[in-house]
Each structure stands twice: as C-alpha cells, then as structure tokens.
Amino acid sequence: MAKLIYSALASLDGYVADDSGDFGWAKPDEEVHRFVNDLERDVGTHLYGRRMYEVLVVWETVGREDQPAHISEYGEIWRDADKVVYSRTLGEVSSARTRLEREFDPEAVSRLKEGAERDVAIGGPTLAAEAFRAGLVDECNLFLAPVAVGGGNRALPESLRIDLDLREERRFGNGMVHLRYAVG
Image (cartoon, rainbow, N blue to C red; front, side, top):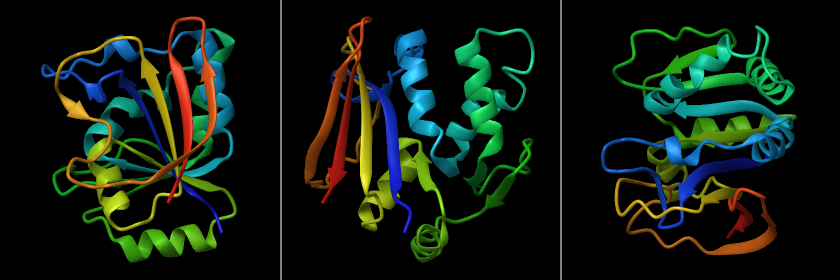
C-alpha cells in the first residue's frame, strides 16, 4: 500500500503563508530544491486544494524552456504525476493528468492509497487537515525556513493532536531544516 505524505514549507513558527498571503520567504534555494525533487520523484499522485493547485500549476510549463537543471527536473516530475484537485469553486483544471473533485472523500483516498503503486502526496494545509482528521496521513515532511512571520495560514491543523515520530532531519546551507516524521 502506498503512503499518503504531507509536505510543507513553513516558517519556524509554523505558517505556510503570512497574514498577507505571502510565502516568498519559503522559496527553496537550489540545494533544497534538489532535495525536494528527490522526495517528489517517488510520488505518483498529488492531491491539492484549489489554492495550492493554482500556485503549482505553473509547473505545467515551467522547466520546458531554458531553466537551471533543478527547475527543469522538478517540472518534469510534476508533469509526470497524476493530480487530483478538490474544489467546489474551480470551473476546470488547466493541466494534463489532472482531474477535479468537488468534495474530499476519505474513503476514496483510502482506496487510492490501497491501489497505488507509488506514494500519494497531499499539498496544502487546509486539505491536509481533512486527511489528518480522517487518519489518512502516514508521513509528514516539514521544511522549516529560518523566519518567524507571526501569523497566517498554519502548516498543521489547529485543535488536533498529531503524534509524530521523527525519522530524519537535515540542515541546509540556507538555514532551512527538513524534518521527516512518521504519523501515528
């Protein structure tokens, strides 16, 4: 059975975006990007909420033109994976290998995990919170940026206890830290 993996770039105080919606402070440098590429290479399907999809859909075209190798590589990895976007308001998707679902269905995601040959990733803290509440998340990758933003959109759900077992840690040259946890 495939794992459901939640990954987030977050501030040290636990936010993926600040109060104004800015997340530029979390932009990975080349070293971090290459590490993320290695993590994402094993993902066969990405589950996104509307906002996360709207941020990431640029990878449908980024990397096709003259770009640094780590950028081109991520574009290829993203385009080669299936994507499911959960949204009640999005009219249509604009990327290949992508389908639109109106509701997050924990039972359908459980069946997806059971039948998948490659891991499934869930992106975006709002959608991930639903998966955490349903007990579906198996692993959590947090990339903590060396900044505290004081508020905004939380990386992990509020009012929910999640027991985590640290499996791996890595410090990058830019001060960012990766923490990989097993959930449960």
